[in-house]
Amino acid sequence: MQSVEEPTRDIYGAQGRDPWPGAGCKEGTALMEVLLVTNLWPRGGTHTFTGVFVREQVKAICRAYPDIHYDLLVIRGQENKLNYLIAPFRVYNAMRRKKYDLLHAHYGLSAVGAVFRGRTPLLVTLHGSDVMSPGFPARLSKWGTLRWADGIIVVSAEMKQLLGREDAAVVPMGVDLEMFRPMDQAQARKAIGLPERPRYVLFASDPARSLKRYDLFLEAMTLLRASDPSVEPFVLSEPRPYEHMPAIMNACDVLALTSDREGSPMVIKEAMACNLPIVSVPVGDVPDQISRVPGCFLVERSPAAITEGIRRALDYRGRVGGREAVMHLGQDMIAARVVGLYRGLISQNTGAVS
Image (cartoon, rainbow, N blue to C red; front, side, top):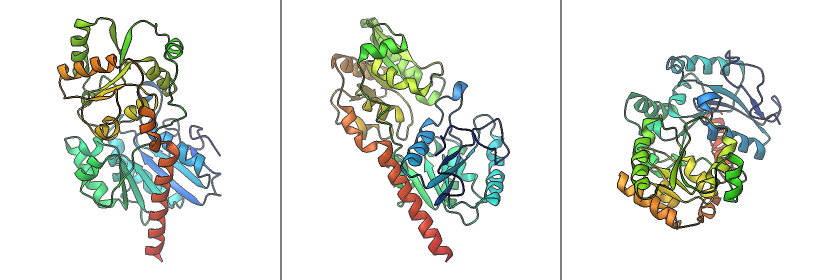
């Protein structure tokens, strides 16, 4: 089995710009050939975390199902919106060169790229902002998905209701329970170079993304530090390797989430796997995830409420029992659900064609 990060031959004319892995079993021996089309895929620089959860899902499926082979087609829409217009022709060329059993698109705008896929079944995974944000891109994502998708995955029940499609499957992205696990806090701080003394509140989103509401977090921390200057924010303002995140979460004392919109935020599940206390506004599936975990707090979307929630979480004085609450969201279990949808769509398509 090839590593999903291992670059192989460029089959779609974008050499040097995207990683084009052949992941899973050796090409030509697969029982299932899948073309993965996504605008979410990690790379260096400021995009270190972008789409890492998509990559991790592919890796989990490849580990558990070695008879599945993936080819990858990345749409770099963040770099140039014109890449979305080119995407349908890239998908068309890919499918002329090779027969695929299934096309799996991550993110709604990637689904639009599958308009010329022919009879190959299309599964679309929607992640939240692609259909929940205001504006034309979200409307286009929703329209394209409803028009062309043979199967739909959404990551929260809220998204299913918003989409209005009863046959959509609610399948959150899985968490790597081996990677994200509780660690000794002193050792975790030593590993990332933090002193032992201050207590840290983690803001694990890109502060430059307005929908993550770093301004709200900053106001809350200003209020908190006015009465307790020993508490400091820990903000991921610079790119860090994804592999450092477990140590960062174990080194901090509280995670704060203040976003305007989310689907099923990975950072919440990863923090729970590390037993890190959480303070969050009610967004996406977060209420379902943390509401029954002592030491985790849902708060109103205001600086004062967030400040009070952080204070209560710090007063909890210990780690929480979040890991037990996310054991059903392990990568292997989610991989099995996704592959079950693959097989169902392929079976339906085979029956329809015959």
